[in-house]
Length: 152
Image 1 (cartoon, one colour):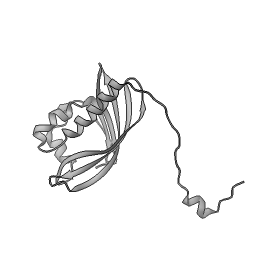
Image 2 (tube, helix red, strand yellow; image 1 turned 30 degrees about the vertical axis):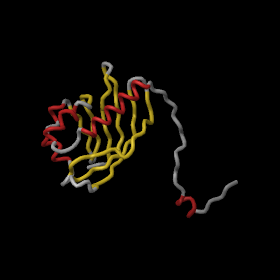
Image 3 (tube, helix red, strand yellow; image 1 turned 90 degrees about the vertical axis):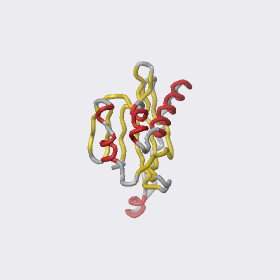
Image 4 (tube, one colour; image 1 turned 45 degrees about the horizontal axis):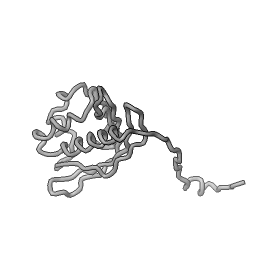
């Protein structure tokens, strides 16, 4: 029998050791990483140049959960440059992936735990952000259906 005092019990942290097995084809895996690469490569200043290619990585309607809000974005036209300027921190120039890990997958949907870093033009770091992306495969094409982020 194990006995814990109150101090020990409060200091304990929960570690989830559940493993979910999945398999995904090489073709789908390649396409998923390509979508995520394009998402970030094309999310930079000048937004007027890059935004159209960035938005090609989305599936619409698109769901974004951040800043205590759930946003349903019906189409690419709902996210003009002004939308992004209002969302991004002052001085933002571009973002890059820090980590990406598929944690669940089926033939037409994957869940990806990600972390990304926001940068200024001089490559100084603004912030690191954790997020969760849901990608779907529609008519044979992978895209980002939704994101849940701790970012503002």
